[in-house]
Amino acid sequence: EIAVAVDTSGSVSDEELQQFTVEITSILHDTNPERIHFLQCDTEVRADKEYTRENLPLRVTYEGRGGTAFSPVIEYINENHPAVSALVYLTDLESSDFGDQPHYPVLWVSTTNEEAPYGEVIQI
Image (cartoon, rainbow, N blue to C red; front, side):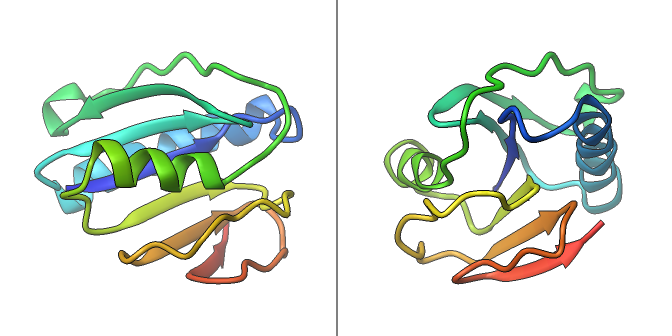
């Protein structure tokens, strides 16, 4: 099981959200994980859905569009999805609220060249 979180804050454009959907589709298609816990978050977790390859093609309605905080996703995963082995977070990385580093690896997939205090950052 992996978690995929999308930053749905107001600083993320509709075009970026569309790109994020393409990236999630690629994860499902190429790696075929047992399941993806798909979380949407701005300053709080707005949606939690479970996806498998059988859900392709994805049709996502994004919720949120407020500020940005990453810690709610980490806390939510720790409380609700303890079997998660990794987190992929699609974002513009425009926040200072990263929370505590979780026990599982974090991959930040960013539309900017910002840095994160933990995990690996790749730019799309």
